[in-house]
Image (cartoon, rainbow, N blue to C red):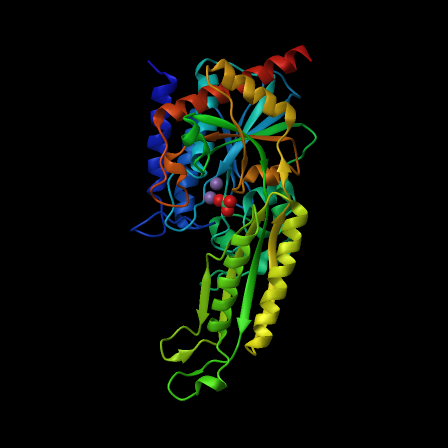
Length: 415
Ligand code: GLV
Ligand code: MN
Ligand code: MN
């Protein structure tokens, strides 16, 4: 007999299967438009079809399943999350949301139940931004906010985003076709692991998200002069790495002193990158987040000023490029309310919390009201292979999502 528990068990098995599709044999790394993404899309296509959905892959590589409504000209409700990963990732960040959504549709399909709205499940092709240092490529394309100049961006191997999309089977020249018409949309809901410790500390399996805090991502490049490690005296060097290193420490100090601020430098490249060559160029990523948009803006200006002062002092050049930004985004009150009631009906205590992590929901908010359901994860660990969820918690999330869709359906019928 299928129970929420047995379906949740299948969801975790599917997460494990997707977790085996990786660019690196020792760990899970799945960047945008790579061969393992193709394997993921093939598996997800099959599971969507088994759940009674028609499936298509759009021009950027998102995979989209559609379950029709009980009548023609009905509106559509969107579910989804992302299928790419960070480097050395866990198995649940992203896929859990896509697979829970598919399982929920499958439940309806097995009961031959149609709702007064269609459901579309999105498996976004990129949310983490690992390959091109630009996050949310999939949902940005769907929301129509992806800046075309990103297509010329090369990855670490010099492959431009345009070439990568084409090789993947997409079409960089027709990304406008990815844009979802918003006129028939009712909303978007994303299930995601919490990626923090609040639910575990409160001993609660799921929680609703109140808002997604604002974030900015920058690429910062320090350019000095490469030279011979043995011949250039210390006082005549223009070492890009030492300048960058001081900047990195200053960023950490500033963030530690500023309440609510988090700032991370997680990627750094040193050119030309040899032990006997003075570093001539360093590029680094800078990720800055704060719940207050004005403070976020101010701090980013201060960081830029710090980088410029540091470059001047060390006689190197600096360029500052903002690659992505969004302010804090509140989840939709009404959808939140429906989710909270679904949690109560499930016999659980309701806890509401903000998300420090970014999510596709923040971008889908350009198109339609959005809400998110968080699932407790082990010690709040995420972006780490130790990421883990309990099958019982996934079963609760599945039942809550189902109740949520059914109460939305009831509302539509009586509207
Ligand atoms: C997505 O994982 C993020 O960076 O918040
Ligand atoms: Mn992530
Ligand atoms: Mn995620």
